[in-house]
Image (cartoon, rainbow over all chains, first blue to last red; front, top):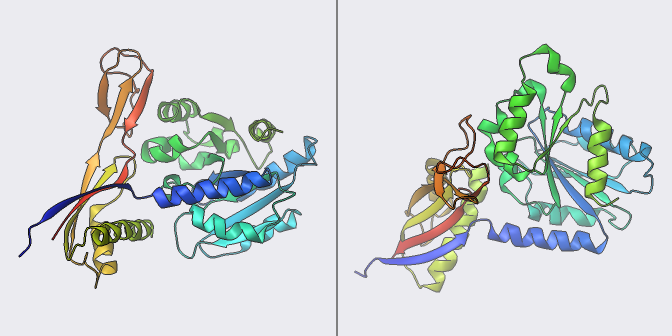
Length: 223
Length: 116
């Protein structure tokens, strides 16, 4: 019987995904398209924030900014249809039961969009605070939403998500007076994980804070 | 579904090294997973058993070594381990500075394997 050998491997499990993500970024660079990866729990307002952002980009006086949306969902077309109604190109990315979007899925979806006129491409990731944080999608910037009803303790439960995002949009701020959500605690906990994180208090329902968030985003994409 | 996708990647890496080293049977696979990356050994093993059937990796035991969140203090150079899921300030255990950066804890690595 042959002897047991110890074989050193030292390979990053996600190395292939990271390489593909780089290719996605190169592809987007050809057309000057900036991709935003928007992540959150189900029901915290990703589609609502996208709609409000589209509206705000238009009203801030940047009609020249071409936008499009990739709607990732396990299996549904509802969100893509909502975006299309707003007059913005949207494609559905069905993850087929997968809990997050990876760069391969994005690479397969890009050819169905005419990227040339698109300056801002928003990827609405699958509603989930765990898995999407672990996967590079090829986006230039990760942003997360936490809605007030979810509670201010979420950084303690999902630290990686808060670490991976450049900005945190605290949505449903109109609920702030109704419960025991402590904004200061949330900010302290989020900044502990990610001292650079930008935090925006927003209500997609009333429109409060949408402008500040959109101005930051436009600055971030260089417009 | 997350673990299943990850397990496919792990198996692919293992089989690539098995071919390279002309292995006939893989008996153990060691993963190093950072505390923040959060993978459950039980599920990885379960999926690995299912998808490795008929390959040289069939029957291999998956061992997960969890790596804690390790920090480096930019002020005093101290290194320390802490957890990020506790609600307490993140400061250097040595000098109390907040100028600390994480140096490990998000690993996602196939470290090694034992094989014949």
